[in-house]
Structure formats: structure tokens, C-alpha cells
Length: 270
Length: 270
Image 1: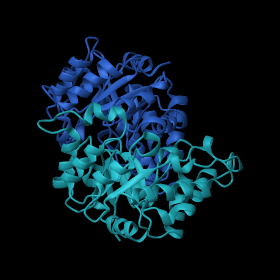
Image 2: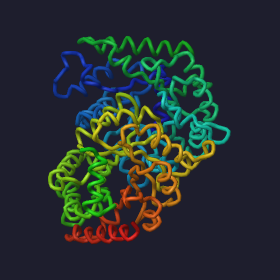
Image 3: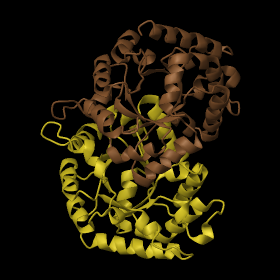
Image 4: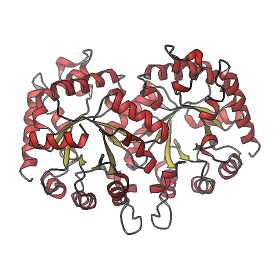
């Protein structure tokens, strides 16, 4: 089943636009997991099992695994999500960006090794850094467009002849590159007016929206700016505010409550 | 010792601007290595040991290791370079690009786990995607500026108000971001006029130049456009044309000849 089909079913069946980001930082783990073998995967599985019925996707951030030589734990975690929670797509947040045979190797890494359903990709190298990913027809490719960080404006907000660079990326992605319906875009919650603009430029394209919670993005403004006519189209990501809501042995239950509150807050404005 | 100091010494002592890119594709290995355990690392060590006195740097491409679950072989390879060929800097070609604590995790991956001397980074997310890397004071950070692929023009060649996007990246990198002297830029050999422009904008900043050989970039034009007054400033990369020059058990000796020819061709125009 294609990424977009799986994602659409998850939006509907779970009544949720919430994506939980899995950025496991061992220094923030509850005491009972500290120093345990496999703690990174165990911590994330606790979050996943407690929140899977409340989310439209999970988004593991590969850097947190790679820094700890824990690629095996990332494979184990994604295998667990697919086995125990079928129907919840996994977006590998890797922000890869390269061309030709190197891009193919990265696609093998993301889709065959880690078995992600979608991956985040950096568009700076242009069309031939996007195309190789599209050869995996059932996978999603989510391009950085307007990122939520302050420095995002350094390049993305430059005027490139009557429009901003991020608008050009949205137009290229929406009109020229998305020949197979596999592409989505990253647009930060810290810029609701720009979410609205990207929505205008891309029809019903799925938008991955980081930046609520810790980064200060407003849920009401984000949902109103980005929802489609069907009240979907968004994967609104929250990572730290959910993962580290609790600090004790009951961290997963506390995370569930935070996820439920966030999902409900989002649904209030759909 | 800092990356730039090591690189400058390598330029001088080895009389070379050649960087050998290590993009190991098992399908192209000589028959005697096919299917052997550790073949990826072994193949690369053969190239490294045959060419180390002819190069100013080695540039392993991480995607080729990650696609094959061979991060341990990448660690082993870089450890080998440092142990057997001290003074040859290792640039990890990873094109990472992220912010805040995620960028820090990627820096731990590149610098602490893999012990690279420098890393390639994608600038699309702006200043706060570059700054975290600079906390590793003895390391180099080489930003994508003008890439050698056709699609590179999709964004990098857009006019952003009297200059192209890649020129803006070069100016930001050269003037605003490079407060610590750790930054370099990637500029493709397929665009010599743009190498000259980047050189003009960045003083003596080190430029990593892919695209000679298989991609068609011209050595004479590249060297003349990019050399500094001292006749250095460039890491001119060749990967496939050297790695796969030979197909038999003598592949390393054949690679050495190809590397020597390329180094000498470069030196003719310094």
C-alpha cells in the first residue's frame, strides 16, 4: 500500500493529525532505563505502544540513533511499529540530499534497510536529488520547504523573482516534481501564513509540520492555515513535549496523556 | 591540529590538490573481493594504501556504507587512514543538515563516532544548521554551495536580488558564518565560471570540487578558476574514475596510476 494511502487511512481511522517524533536522548530517559542495553529502542517502544492509537504517523530522527551506534535499535523499533501497530506509517527523519547513485544508496538505507514508509529529503540540490527516491513507488518523499528554525529565513525567505525561495520549492514540488503523488513538504508551525501559502500552492499535498510545543508554534493557527477541505492534509509533529512529559517509570502513560491532549487540541480546529 | 592546518600541510607536503572519493559499490569490486566479509572496508583500504602519498584528502561517502549496514567498516576504514597515513585529512561526505540538538547528534556521529576531520553539510536550513558543527573547533564544515549536477541550477542558480542563491551562500559562509575559520564550500567542476566567482567572494577558503572525470568537468578550467595565490585552496575530487580504473586483483595499482595521472594533470595548471 502506498504511503499516502496508509497515511490517509491513519488520519481517518485514528481521527488524528498528530505525528509523534521519536528523538531519543538517553540523558533524558527515566532512571530505570538509564544505562540499560537496548535502552534507546525500549524507551521509544514504550512511547509507541502508549500512543499508537492517537497518531497518524511516527517520525524517528535517525541522528539520535547514529550518534550512539544504534542503527540496529532503529531497525528493531521500526520493525516493532510495523508488526504491532500496522497501519501507522513511519517517516524516517533523515533530511538526506544527494544525487544519482548516492541518492539510490540513501534510498536503500531508508526504505530497504530501515523499512520506513517515507523519508525527509533536502531539496537544495534540485530535481535530480529528488527523482531517485521516487523509484520506490509505494514510499513517500517529504521535502524541506519552510523550516521552523530562525535561520530558516536565511535562504528560504529570499525573494527569487516575485516569490520566496520556499514558495518556489512548493511550486516545483507541487507542479513539476510530483508526477507520482509521492511528495510531501515540511512547513514549520512557527509560520502559519506560510503554511497557508504552501497549502494554496500544493492542493491536498501532505504537509509535515514541526514546531508546535517547545518551538512555540500555535496549534489553532497551524490547523486553520494548513488543513485541507477534508480536514486532513497535516502531520503535526510533536517530539520532546510528548517524549519527556514524564520523567519516571510511568513516562509512557504520561506521554499518552500529552499526546491525547495535543491530538484533541488539534481536532478542536479541524 | 585543526582541519585547515592539516589540509594545508597535506597540500604542501604531498604536492597535491587531489581528493580521492571513497564510494564503494560492491557490484563493481574485483572478483577476489566479491562476497568477502569486510569487503567494503578492504576494497577502500587497498585504494587508500595505494594512493595516500598522492592526495590531499580522502572523502568517504557514508551512503555507500549505510545502505549495506556497514558503519563498522566505515569506522574501521577511517581508523586505518588515521593510523597508517597520519596527516591525510578525512572528509565525511554526509551532506547532513539539521538544527539544534539534532545537528549536535549528527556532529557526534561524524566527529566522535567516525572520527572524520571534516564533514559536508547542506545549508538550506540556514545559520542555525551550521553553527552547531562549529563547536568542534578542530573540525572542518564544508557547505554545499554550487553542486555539479544539472538539477543544481533549480534553486542554486535563482536570482535572489542581484546575485544567485549560490553566491548568497558563498557570501554568508565567507563573511557572516565563518567566524572560526572552519568553513569550506562545495563548488562543482562543471561550472568553472562559478568556481571563479566563489573564489572571489571567499578569499582563500578551501573549496571541495567534485565533477571532474565521469561528470565531465575540465581540470585546466577548474584549477585556473579556483586556485589561490599560493596555488592551493582546492580539494579536487575524483571517485569512480580512480576506484574502478582497474577491475582485477591489481585494481589498487591501477587506481594509483589513475590518481597519479590526475594529480599531475592538476599540477600542470597550478
